[in-house]
Length: 232
Image (cartoon, rainbow, N blue to C red; front, top):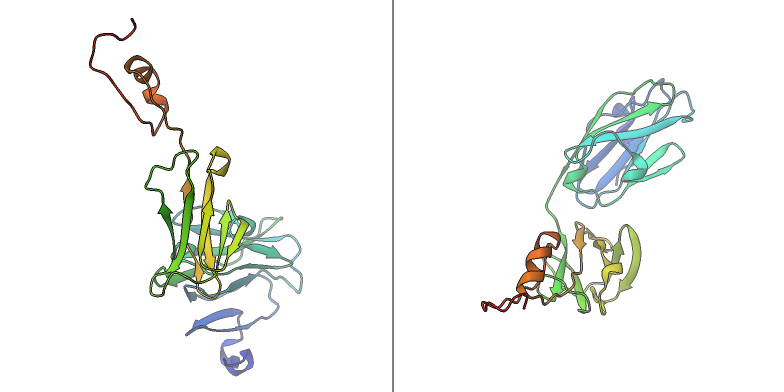
């Protein structure tokens, strides 16, 4: 990968250049954060920096995407010092990025365009939906183009819960406490989109009780009788 010095003609302004997986960067001290158009592909690591006269005090990085408006770095990335970084960028990270200071000044707007296709998927291998309380739930993390036996890390609500050497994770006797947003990550290949898992109770109800609560439960099993004995 060429060094930043080899791109001297472009180093009058800070930039991040994505080209065939190669990242080059250079920074200069300016009155405001300035960054040219960024293009990335799936799996790239991105780091954006807010800087003003060698000081980053009071700066924060925000973005607008198709999904969100004016969200701060700590909602989708990692803020450290004057830099915001996030790895394994996806197409939904495409959007407009900028820096703001506490006093109000706003930097130039920067377009981030991410192109590519999803390469990692998380699949609910068993059971067949819906997931019922008490079931054993198996999640499979796999690449689209390779066998599904690569080591994978599984996350719930953004926190690591388990690393599995073969890309499979089983949650035994699932309960409502297991409800949450799950995703998986295969090192060096990227992470899957997040999936929401909600276990439901299996209810066997008579006609009268069932009609009373049917509007309250999104998933239920309803066993009815056509006889006229209801309520007797």
